[in-house]
Image 1 (cartoon, one colour):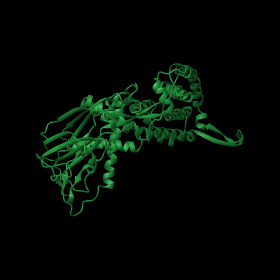
Image 2 (cartoon, one colour):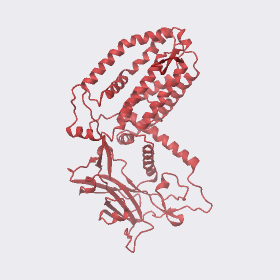
Image 3 (cartoon, rainbow, N blue to C red):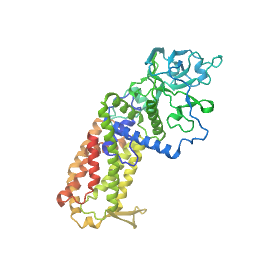
Image 4 (cartoon, one colour):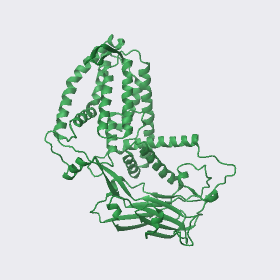
Length: 525
């Protein structure tokens, strides 16, 4: 899920984030599907964040200023106007080259109005050689007023009023290869071909095809003034000379094409099907589609990763989920963001103002650092997206910030380690040592070791015997990571044990714990 970088992800969320990163990479592999609640909630929060930022940019940066002589432009296509639609397929993005190929679909005298029903044209074609050679095929759409031509050499060429759009029909997606095997027996479940590729490459770019594309012309008569049109409309609106007229927005829509429905292209695929649909579109609906596309491009530009999986999960939820439930999910997801921020704020505030550490488990501070470091190394070893790494680094920084608050750090240069490194000692705060907290904290960890160590050894043996690994380093990290996912919650018991022995909970950060409890409930829900 896409979460703001200043919110440390919880351990249970890392597994979901890792699965989301691998959507394109594991397109042909058997991967378990994650639930839609958490992903949809994360996407909704990111979507809200994107629109808040867009609004801020428009408010502070503006979209230009309206001059004294500016006039509002009207739509060149009046209601009820008839137009012709031409769809060409080409291996080139060049408009002139596309016109040299025969049209794939022609639709004459279409009414520019809401009364037009959807029209569909479907045809199977021999697989273009460009697809087989891992190149691309483009759809070129030309719309002109009825009776006018799309060819420049003809007298009735619609130079000023022609509407044009181009869209790539295929997609290039990564499939990653890693050389894994059982470290004891050397056996692997991967095919011989996959093993050979893993020895020579880390990933392969494959060509995929989806048969559906919708051609939509925005039906709207709003009067726009050049220079003050808001995004995303401004990027798509084309004004004529003088700025008194504009052509309708043409949108080539493949939003509902899910990644899982794309067909891999190879030499065994002799034919591909292409289904084109024309349907009019409202302006508000175009804004929704275009905003989603802008958000995706923005996320990819920041290398946040995981976007296709997030988008697909949201689309599937929109198709399959009751609208009332969708509204509940959106509202609760927004509350989740608020509670997450409040928990972060109160945690920092609690430790910043804390001077008496009686009743708090100091050992869990170091445990939190070690836990976050292990997870960070694990996600680095598995090439997780950039934003997850940033969240983890910030989480590690926060945990390290707590150390000098709880301990008196002393550096001894007189007796260096190996004659080079100074010795560093961490002495707990006096309020912690002089109270019974230190004794109960040591007792709790002593009891905990009797349980945790056997579980760790057992899980390590199981992982070594039954699971494939990239190497011994990856095995150590994956074992520790999996162990934390299953048993990391046990590390809360020292604090509970101290509370039980002291018969008091007055020293705990109740606000922060309350917000985290509510968010945990939302995650489980």
